[in-house]
Image 1 (spheres, helix red, strand yellow):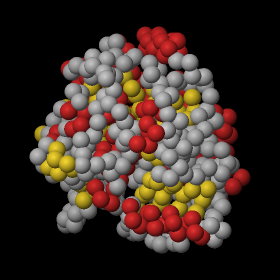
Image 2: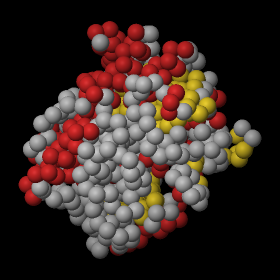
Image 3: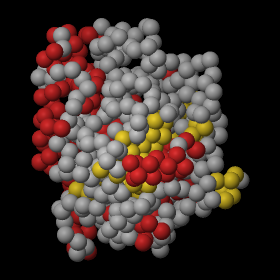
Image 4: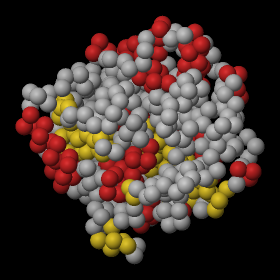
Length: 558
């Protein structure tokens, strides 16, 4: 730990000495205006760098982590390493994902419109997640291989189960992956054909996993192995499955937060918002007084339900702290090998916090996947193998408030993610950055860091590929441009019959408000610069603007 801190401090000193930009000040440029550099070149201008000088890229993605679920964004959960990296780096408070796991991965890997790039295949008479990322898009690991990077992955894939669509055939030199959308965090089968593991393309049977297998620990073990056996520059993608349900933790982590959440989610929500406000990471204009929770007041719950939800949140917090512990292992390993200074670390969640209430409430009809019949959800078994629980809507709202919504919605609590970038050698740290960015921008940003450019549209590796939609945010973070997008640029989302679009200060959304029922609602319009809490619908006041944005969504993002 001391070695790591000394190296980080040295790198920060070098960056500060070389940079004249003021430190520690928020950057206030929400969705524009952007400089010509950022707006005109999706992949950014290729840098004149050698393979030796180009930085490694470590991309860490948490699964369904709420906006305020780490200390640097307002949490009480112990996360020393992640917080240290976030405070020393640039915290991104205007960074968007998609509303759910698979859709976010399409955005990040292909920089594409999800409705075009995600092949929705008929579901077979099984639990197979048949959807897959189309081969008509070149993706990050392929492109970084072309740029001379070694490419590694350990974690959740969720972009295709079939040969030709898996990590080992889409650009990763080394990989250990969970192919599907979810699995137990222990070496046990929940669904025969839904949770599949592959090691460098070869099937891994559950009986072949170590007896002490725990997903977050093991993914970290493998990423350390991959980095240790290779040479820089490398790209390491670690999409952890923490803290996605089912909430599981090793025995020595189970009770670290015992009793911590007995006061309930209303009290936690207030404490989180107060701390996040002090830290400057709550979007200006979003206040708790305007927040309308969907979960019932804590005091109205039965004693049994309060006990269940509080225990679920204890397990959730333990998983987040364990995630931080493993990020610390990665950082210490890089420091010991002298690679930390030359590694860009980007951390993000893949969407808002989950609201499932497995273990507390009966599984709702149509919920997929439902817990298997053989699950042992006796209270004393929660968090252990063969259990299946989550922390519920109230604690999910505590992790996203004062933003409305959560995972599965296009409200800000479902799309705006906790995220930060740490690379003191080039990116001035100790900042809060409020510039609009999204997962669409990850691919072009990584190409920019690698000194490369996107080859499409055209022929690529024997197939025809499309171009990309995102913009590199690297020139912005390194002080070369004022923003990433211009005020006229739009980013849209679509899933099922719902959708949203952001252009400049304005956002339209046509899915039910958080907690609502049904599949279609009239389009709503918000000024998310002044009203990030999405409380004041301007659609009737500004019908022409609403119609213009709806037409843009229908033409380009539906």
